View 1 (cartoon, rainbow, N blue to C red):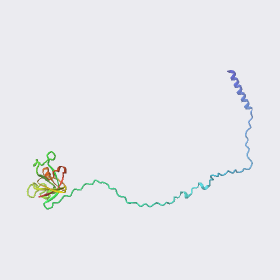
View 2 (view 1 turned 90 degrees about the horizontal axis):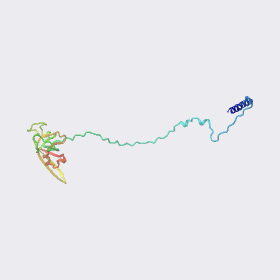
View 3 (view 1 turned 135 degrees about the vertical axis):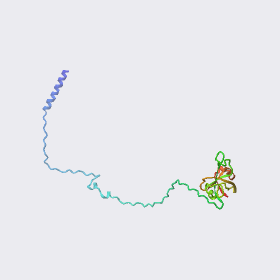
View 4 (view 1 turned 180 degrees about the vertical axis):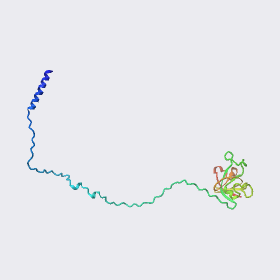
Length: 213
């Protein structure tokens, strides 16, 4: 191992001595005293740029006027908007002579509709509506007697047509009660009286009638 180290050191010293023996000539700058000749570059045959090619041309920025087509608008139909308007009350019918046209309903049926306290077992009774009370006179709360509608007997007439055959039915009732019955709702009959006029009264509910007195 010592011999190899000594040999390596000797080789390194020999290299150092050889490098120091080589002489290096320094560079000396000498200016060129001849005549300069311009070098001509070959033009590109594909693209030769000009000064005007890179200038912004005013024609490029100008917007050419275009004709706008004239469109004649057609009137469109306004959509119908459903509005929840309050229903107008049905105009009440005026009495003609000693008769009054209108509609009749029914009440007083066992297990279905209560009756008057003074007449709890049914019968031919009725409640007069506002139009009928005004036609007969006496006001809403008059006492039974002349000029008062209470306890007055009226005739209720019902006429209908079925299979080209006209049928007329009538019944006499006592006005022993009153009802609010708006519009042309003139009378509210006991179910016994309504059954005489129309056996299908529970299905129909309301029938047109003429009241005479």
